[in-house]
Amino acid sequence: LRGEKEELTQYQKLDRDRRAVEYTLYDKELRRARETLDEIEHARADEVEALSGLHEEARSTHDSIRSVEAVLKGRTSALRRNRKALKEMEEDKTAAVTRRTKLELECRELEEAVRTGDETMAANRREIERLDREIAEVEKGLEEDVKPKYEAAKETLTGLTNELDEARKKMESLYAKQG
Image (tube, rainbow, N blue to C red; front, side, top):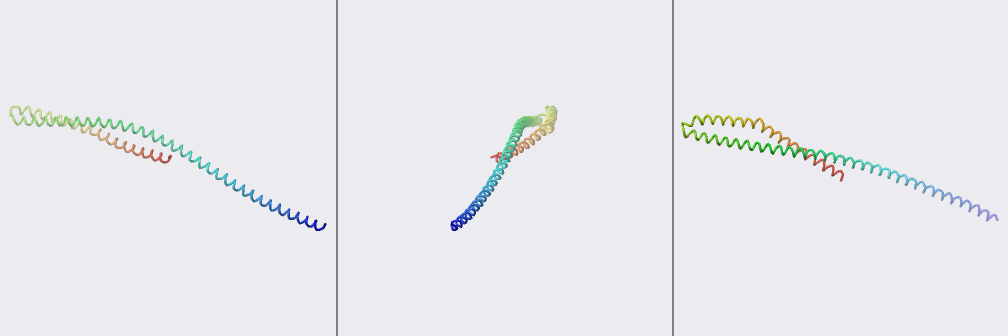
């Protein structure tokens, strides 16, 4: 009976030790599982925050693209108007140059006529003087009116072309960021 009692006592002690070891293992696994769960939750929160930032950046980029497209549309329209105005001024300049050429030709013809006769010389000199004055007025008109407008329109066209190129580059970089 004593042998059985000792055996029972030893069994109970070993059983307690076994349960203590099982509890320790269970507790370690539980702690490890909780740590892993905390790490996963932290990583998930980081990913949600990063995704929110990406969504905000995409919205901001989209708004920037819209803004740039609106500016581009306005500048394209202004460029079209300025090109039309420049074309009209070039046509005016061409007409003025043609008139000047005709007047110069007429002046040469009159000078030739002067050489052919003394009688018509006085009349021709008066005509030449009139034409010279007209040529001077036309040249003055060209210098004062048409040329400054032409140069200003040309500079505006160059500036708008540069702005249009910059706006296109900016739009392409914004599309590249979004893409």
